[in-house]
Image (tube, helix red, strand yellow):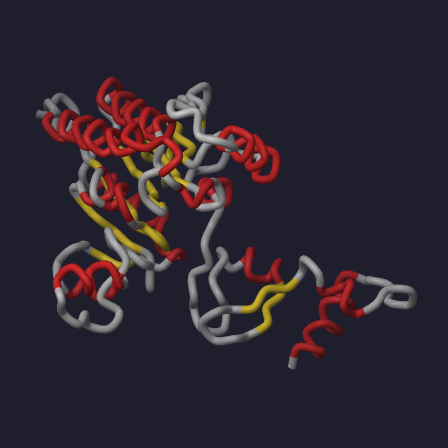
Length: 289
């Protein structure tokens, strides 16, 4: 029961409850799992890699926590951090909203890129963050991804991108849509060099990101029960005039139909990527091409 969990946590942390209401103690410390309805202690969830210990539901992760989980400790060196949001259309209130998000999330954009090691293997890592305008792709995100790709080419390092996005950023209009072609072109150059690209699709990966670099991986992994698609189900049904199968945009359905290569639970993600990097590591003295 929830009350037993409260008592257990309070005893463990030696929290004084004499002058503190129960509702006040709950604020910020508890989360309800959308899948099983269980009330969970946040710290317990964090220690379990932000996965529900009751049903295995994978909660959405910030880029900071994702990097902590995937990159070897103290190896992540950020790149392209100077590429910041522009306002090409002078969209009313856009930069003010971005400024507020920067203060709230301590992020500068919806993707963080860098060079790191994963299980001892050096690579370029880009991690999107849904907390920043739902991970939408504007000119800054497109440029950061492109720089990550170019860094991988220059240093002949494999590239891993963790995708989470609501699609192209409407506040930048056509400029945001151009990032689809820009990032896809950069990935083509990477693959022409014979350099490994692993795309990891997390919940949700939609819109222009799905239609560009997210779907172009040499190996495409996904987390369990992740929403992956381009347009929403209602839009698709209205367009094709057909009823869609249930859960057709979930990672399990996409695996069954060959869109992704493997569903990987979060506890296995670092080890799985590490093994893939080792398997595809060029033999010394050989060319990547």
